Image (tube, rainbow, N blue to C red; front, side, top):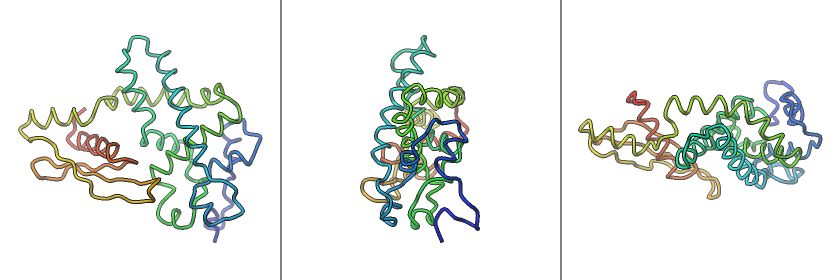
Length: 239
């Protein structure tokens, strides 16, 4: 059974997906490549290239456009505040959320192992696919097309980030709160690391007074630690 032909349903093609979203793709090979994970390439020799180069390009395009968008829309904010907002908007979890909003997981081309392992819901893979889509859109239609696609999503996300203080440093915030409540200094413990060397996912848990509170995952120990701190703050009901 093909990994994208589930229950006899005909899956949406990457080009059909792009047209549904109004993205100006005319070259099927480019959008197809953006959705092709390395694991699919390993199992389908007819596929010519995976999306890692497009992911690299999309990451750079996102950093620039998100920074420029924030500069224009928040003239009152200082450099440090803008940097924290940009980090919150381009972090793995947020880009994966953008991917979920457009149902990007459904058209990702994954190898059978990645698919069976829940790859369509994997935050790291969703983030990478979204970055690849951005890279492909930039090559197809330029910066203005990427900006038009991103702007409504950025407007919604930045409001949520500011309301929930997700632009603040979660580790520092958690440490201040824990110490003020006599809970000691938070300890972070790496409990899992999975995936190939170039695409590892780490899982970290937070301990307060020796008790496990929150857990988080990320593509680096640092990112996983921050995610775990955010999860702990949410568990404690701290803004």
